[in-house]
Image (tube, rainbow, N blue to C red):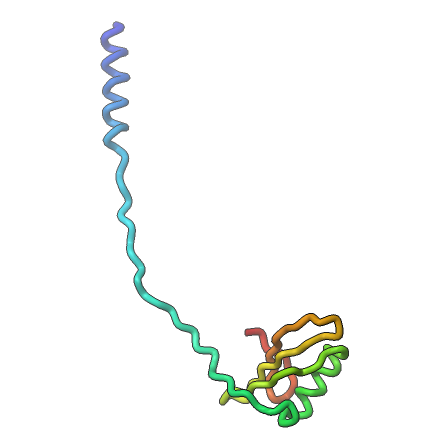
Amino acid sequence: MKNLALATVLSFVGITAFANVETPQLENNSAIEIVVGDFEEINVSDLPSAVSSAVETNYPSATIDKAYKNDQDQYKLELTLEDGTTGTVYADAEGNWIDM
């Protein structure tokens, strides 16, 4: 009876040892490129009044350091707050904020 139990255990161990199937790894060598649009620097004075008003309304203590525009009439604005914090925001020509 001991031999039967021992044979059963050894058979189970042998079967499970070879049951480890290796999953093949797929290689992904493709590159993903996201084109946001090329922004060209413009004068801050050339911003539409709607964009300037949106900055004054939402960021009253901010100064527009640099402004950029792309071919879709979207604006990238580099702002500095009174406390020295800097940030970049995006808006369309109507002064609506854009998440990018």
